Image (cartoon, rainbow, N blue to C red; front, side, top):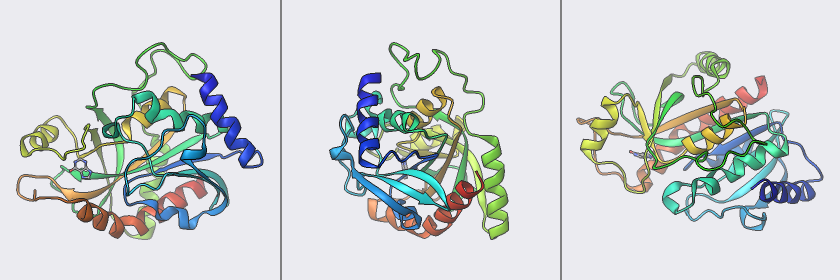
Length: 271
Ligand code: HPA
């Protein structure tokens, strides 16, 4: 595994004149606009990077972008990988591990999620304060890669509390509501049943989505501080649940995108 990771890292370094990113950013479904704020130095297709998985979802474009955001060196994954696409957990987190080898010190993650907390509304932003992993596995199963991190990583503070606090300040200054909550990761690709939404709510989730948790586990294993945020794209409480199609999710994400973009840009700037 280390050899595969190093091969990919070397390739990226060779194509980017040795660019050393300080921050890693993973953009979720319908949330690619942050890239417009990046002064792009290099764009690499996932398909050209040795050992990289290739994105199969149309709404995810599959590019690694290296450049400056708010004057800081960033590497951005435009398009991410999901468990439901058939990847192994190791494949899912491969890019996050490569980010670490490239020099990334902090990880920022966004996703689209269903809202379970009745106080939420469609297109709200929810800072993730904790998670519940409901995927049938995790990326640390198997022989531990000691070069990356410990066998039994601590999970008592997965999401960096300083960055969460800073995000709340940024939102307050910009005068928009920012919620906090627990994200549950479900396998997908089907959305959940009414009974499943009820169950998720009972076990303590405020939002549910199909990504993020594997990448975050891999990042924490490597000791990387993480900031993660959900855009609530559909409400899943019993009184507000309705049939959802991808177009609705993308529309709700688009409404939230300017706020999300501003928030991540400001956080990166202050990091
Ligand atoms: N469930 C799971 N994933 C999602 C949802 C949902 O309701 N909405 C957006 N992503």
